[in-house]
Image 1 (cartoon, rainbow, N blue to C red):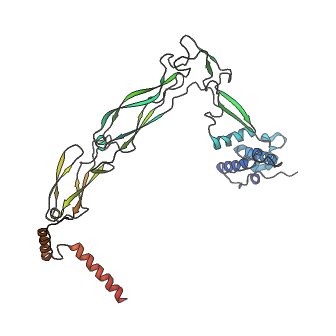
Image 2 (cartoon, helix red, strand yellow):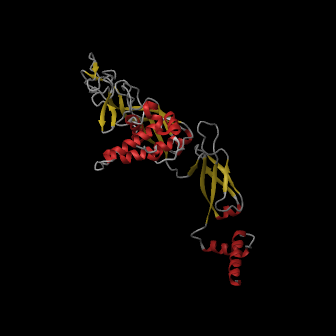
Image 3 (spheres, rainbow, N blue to C red):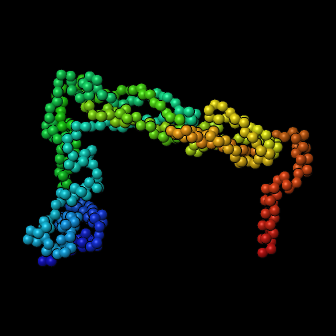
Length: 376
């Protein structure tokens, strides 16, 4: 009786690489699994055929033998036969699809080292704090090691014994169809031991929840979203295991004067019509609590930028600093008196196109545009 080609069973070409073989097998295995096809009597047979084909081709030596001799390579005891190891292949695919199951890895051993959970703390600071840095104190509710039992969970003077649920392995095995799955022992929590007499203060957990006050140094130059890690300041581990870490995420409040872009600062500064035309000076604040005089050149337009070198934010863990850019906004006069209006009219009558070259150029371009449309 002829046997089907292994590559044909998996639906791949003969030069398919290992990743292609695995992907094809995974799709077929999930599609043909008997648990998904309870009303299809042929599903189990097809599933076994696919599994056996993949078992042969995933092994480089078996695949090389099959490529040379076909099915004859596995007859009469050669190269391991064509039965396939369901457990190994399906366990590989199961790990790819589902990863850890209920907190444990396949083949994992006793878990005496149950590290504490990492914690997150959100903290809002001002732009001034980000500029100069600051020392702060935060209050964090977290689990810490029980002082009464020293973190082992047992009442002082008592001990622990081997868990009867897992025999001290910290893992228990459960079978589900073709799968054999290991998970953390629910009785001992993966430690492999049970406490004879739990501690009265922590109930056997080895840790208690309380609020702690921690000191924190925020360096100068931090940006919005900066993460600070405090090692070992997270939740205490189970029964003396190492504590997790505390991650502090910083957010910087919007500022009423300055806008930040990396290490550079931007400040929008309104100036009067006459100041823009004639020039002058402008006092601008800086984040160090001081101020500086900025020279306004005659003829300054809205949107012009005046750069103040090294007046921006400090660069984190560096001696460098960004720049401060003053963006001028020419303010149009409002609520004019009769005299002011007369003076402006007089000024306008005395003005020429040279005084407003941009406006004159725009009007000329508009005229040329309409003249061109009329000539079409």
